[in-house]
Length: 287
Image (cartoon, rainbow, N blue to C red; front, side, top):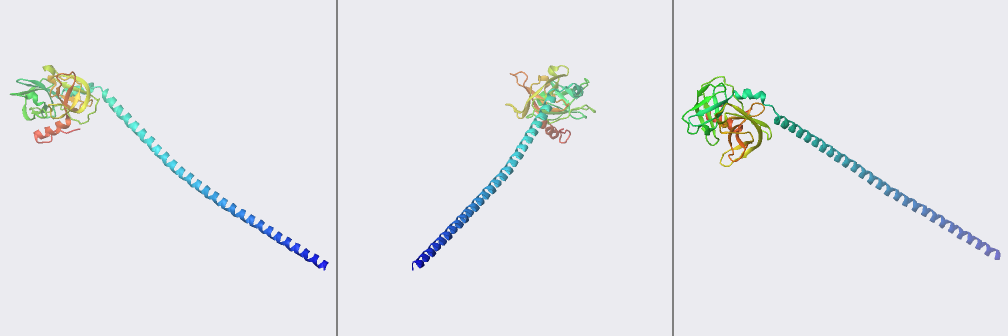
């Protein structure tokens, strides 16, 4: 009986031991499975983080390339602007340092003196067949007008038309093959110009200066004028204001009586259409 009890206990202990081993093995397997799941989740999170970081890096690279491209465009635009300013400066510098000796002789031969019974002024040929332009006030209250060219040849002129608002008059003399002056609307502040005239009834003279301002409104006058520091005198009225190319940028009109070397000229853009209107034909053009 005692032997049987001992055998039962032995079996019982073995069963308990087997159960313990099975439970231990089960816990061990559960632990490793759990650790593996956590590891896989951690790896997945790390992969997502890496993918997100790569995406951000790609975005930053694209953004950096775009900003670099914008910066390059800005640099190129700045270089272009500097180049343009440099070109404009060189043009202005060349115009302000121009030597007029090469154009004065040709220009003077196209300028005339205008003498009336009570005034004297200047004008210039605008065509080769005798059309002459001058200021309207030079002809004020005149009974006749005499045109004297650079060769001292005198001819009586016919009045074709007049515009007192613009202070512009158009004359015609019976003369062919005249050296005439052409017009331009190319006016730049700072460029050198010359005024050719017959100041105070003396022989032809040349005064040099610069264009100080454009589109200048003057009280009591109807147009926007070119302002210049060229010395103007009463005898210069109606004479041409000429650039370095020998082209007329305006016609000398008046100076301020209370200021030195502040003169005003009617721009060519007003003169050309008015001449063609007065003669009812297109006889002059703008270069």
